[in-house]
Length: 318
Image (spheres, rainbow, N blue to C red):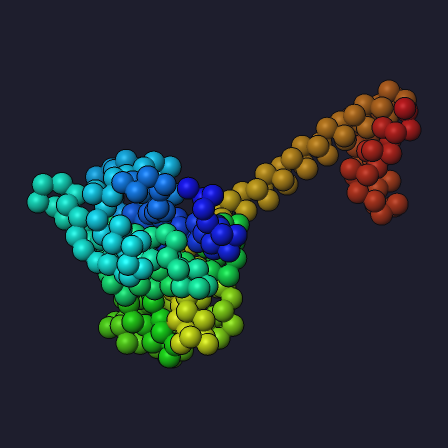
């Protein structure tokens, strides 16, 4: 199914596929890439990804399989007419998903594939920006931590060229309410209430960035992803993760590790001292208390630690 594609089309697909899992999470949608098949009655499913951010009925993964054209009329229409198509798909009796299909075009404008988004909970702005994010990726992003997958608790914002928030999921709205910011839509990210200049910087530079911000007792990890290049208008997707408890746990773990390291050091020193005292007791007929006092006096006089002295005593008999 890839053999008929040009080198440019294959390269574009490789980049797009690297961000497909993130796209599914952002859009709360099952995302699928289709290609035409040599048999005109079928379509090829190059890759299909389900979101981590949405729960629901588990559907089979069609990656690598063929589907009949008659089962995917909207996808077929996109491939044939090189247009975006929107419709509905019946998930089960009486339950319908929103279904968007976008053409994948090469630099000459030719349609070589289709990209679909299927969701029960659509947000048209977020889906549109997710498509733009995929189509404007300059390189593969699977190894870039800024493009890692979302969790169901992560907040999401869409910010336009004027740094105005034009879309937000419920998780983002809740996080901002905790921070004392209400009526999130229409707010500017450079406004005093929010004051995140990194969003404008990402829109200007086209380079993803990560930051941490503290407000009203919350510590937020913020990822800002460029969507539309500034030359074409500019926009960004902002991903928010509440890491307050995570950082507290990390600090507690760091303190415990430091305490454990001290205990290990103390135990190691104790073992060395016991060996050194034994050597002195055997060599000079000292009691354990006398050997220990002698080592204390010598370490103070030589300005070395008891551990260093014990190591020297042990080395002297080897």
